[in-house]
Image (cartoon, rainbow, N blue to C red; front, side, top):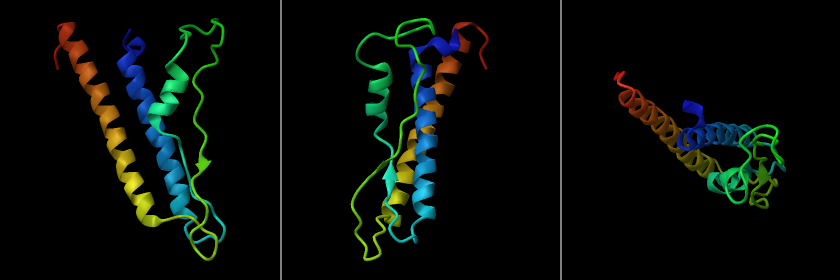
Length: 127
């Protein structure tokens, strides 16, 4: 019952997207000194969620047409190189993105926790 709620599914997907995006940001920071490395990032969560769950028919069971599960977003190259060695990683930009991702992850956990608390109260089990 609990995992079928749309809000919990969205919060779970947001947390997974934030974790995956943090991994891409970590790769960018790790390759900040490599000549020719191109910074990458994931598409916006709203865009990827709309593609996976938004418009059109939803498949609610594995046997439905088009049900292939959720696919993870792929990282894409952000911009052409700005530095003389061809590296396009900006540590300042990556740190700002890391802070955004942390806020998204915290928000997802907060939504999940609050939904759980509401369900417990509705069932009369409280905290």
